[in-house]
Length: 128
Image (cartoon, rainbow, N blue to C red; front, side):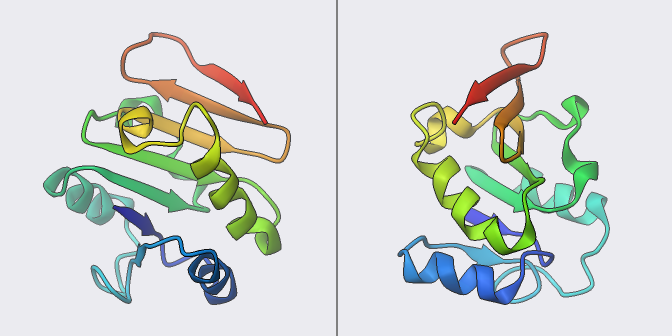
C-alpha cells in the first residue's frame, strides 16, 4: 500500500491518479488531518504492514526509523515534480516492488536516491 503524507499537494496526487498509481493520503482516506506529528504517523506505520510512505518532511530521513514492515520516502524535489519522482522511484529497478522497498528509509532528489537499508550498516546511493 502506498500512503502519501498530507504535505503532498492535491494536484500532484491527481497526477498520480492519472497514471493509475493507487494510494491513500493522510487526512483524506486514512488517518486524521491533524496528524502533523511524526510520532502519530510512525505509530500508524508500525500498526500496518507493507506500506511505502511518501512525504516532503525531511525529518523522516533517519536511519533510526528503519523497520522491516515499511518504507519511508522523503522527497527533496521541486514541489511541482513530486508526482513525477514518486512514479520514477516506483519504476526504479532497485525499488520497483514492495519487497525491494521494505526495510528502507529513502531520500529522493533530482540527482540520485540516498537510502538506509535495514540489512546494511552504511547509507547507500542509487542513480537515476
